[in-house]
Length: 99
Image (cartoon, rainbow, N blue to C red; front, side, top):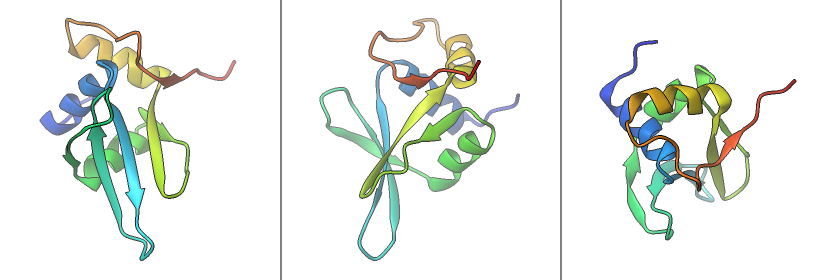
C-alpha cells in the first residue's frame, strides 16, 4: 500500500502514542488535530489525510461530538509498526479486529 509522507507520519505518530481528534464546531466545521499524550495540540492534520486513512481501513473514529477520536485499526497498527523502528507505544489505542 502506497502512503503519502503525511499519511506515514500520522500513522507512526499514532503508533507512538499521539492522539488524533477531529473537533466539530457548532457551525459544522471539522478540524483534525494531533495531540501529544499530555493533551497538548501538536499540529493540525489536513482532512484529506485523515479521510484517506479511514477509507483504507487504517483508522476508525468513535463519532463523538464535539470531538471524535480516531483509533488505529489492527491493520493500521500492523502497517504503522512496519514504518517505524520504535514499534507501538504501550499507550497506543487501537480497535481489535472482529473475529
